[in-house]
Each structure stands twice: as C-alpha cells, then as structure tokens.
View 1 (tube, rainbow, N blue to C red):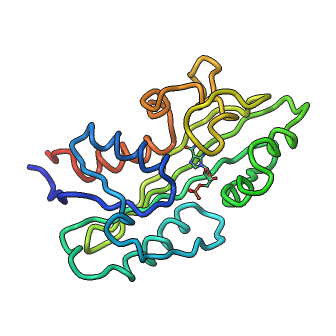
View 2 (view 1 turned 90 degrees about the horizontal axis):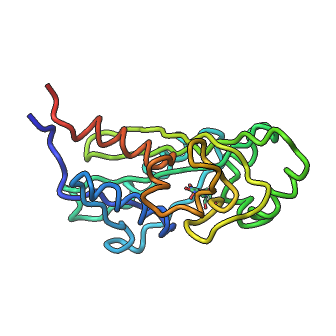
Length: 202
Ligand code: IMP
C-alpha cells in the first residue's frame, strides 16, 4: 500500500538552480515539485542565523506555512537549507554560506585555502517538509575537497570550487546536472525523503 501522496509539493526557494535540481530529480520519482512563489509570490521569509541547517529549514518552513492563504490544503510545502563546511576552517562558512557567497564569494574561499594541503569539505542539505499536519526533516551530505582553483561553468554557488569524492577529480561545475545529483547533498536528502514518504510500505 502507498502512503498518501500529495498532487504536488510546493518548494519555497529563491534559488532557481536548487529548484531545477530538485524538481528534475523528483520528476524521475513521479513527484511533482513546483515553485511556491509561482502561486504565492507575496510570501517572505527571514533567514534566521542559527548553527544547524535543520533548525534554519524548520524555522523557514514555519514562517512559510504561517503565511499560506486559502487553497493550499491539498499541497505539501518544502524548504531546504544548505551550506559548505570546510574542515581546515573549522566548518566555515557553514551556516554563513549564503552571506560568504555574496561577500567574498568562492574566490575568497580559494584565497583562504591558498597553500593549504588538507582540503576536505562537505556540503550539507536539510529539507523541512510540511504535509498539512506535521513537519518532517531529511538530511543529506556530500563529502569532497576544495579545488585549488575554480573550474567549470555549470551549476551555481560553490559548485566551481567543490570536487565531490568519486567524481574523478572534477568539480560539480564540470558535471551535467544528473551527474551532480548522483553525488549531491541535495539529491541524498531528496532520495531519503522520497524513500521515507512515498515508497510502498510492506
Ligand atoms: P542556501 O541554502 O540557499 O542558504 O545556500 C547557502 C549557500 O550555499 C548559497 O550561497 C548557495 O549558493 C550555496 N549552495 C547551496 N547548495 C549548493 C550546491 O548544491 N552547490 C553549490 N553551492 C550551493
């Protein structure tokens, strides 16, 4: 028996790259993801400065659900918070990933990592999902290293400077979207979400 499934999940994000990755992956699983802003452009969310991605995602989700108007009773609502954690920098930029991206950017991270040998890093993603009744959380991560220089043209954010383990030394920006999704933190979290909520239970 299948667990009850919504007709669609509405994703609140201002990041088109994130939305495309998530919606393409979910489509393969038969789950329709749409941008909440296409239906409710007035919804505004303040990103809280918290240490855990999960707390940020849940806080944002609650803000979104609190502003939902009529007509969304049958929909599920999703938000996702992600970031890059670099071991040599004690997990920086972590929860500050968005701020760091818009200030010093990936080039600034490369400067901080100049001459550093141990370049281990990971992307983390936390999804918070509202099913009309309760909040579910799902976490995904992707281990890798910081590239010595920015390489590639695809993707978004820190993709040009992140080399996932198992990707033959290429950055996310050198990969097609479906290949990135075979490694990525976001895809891992979405796969867990789909397996937990939508696969037949026996
Ligand atoms: P947020 O989850 O949108 O707050 O993302 C925080 C920062 O991490 C932003 O600057 C994003 O561009 C970046 N980011 C999130 N996910 C990814 C990814 O999959 N690749 C590269 N950068 C990402």
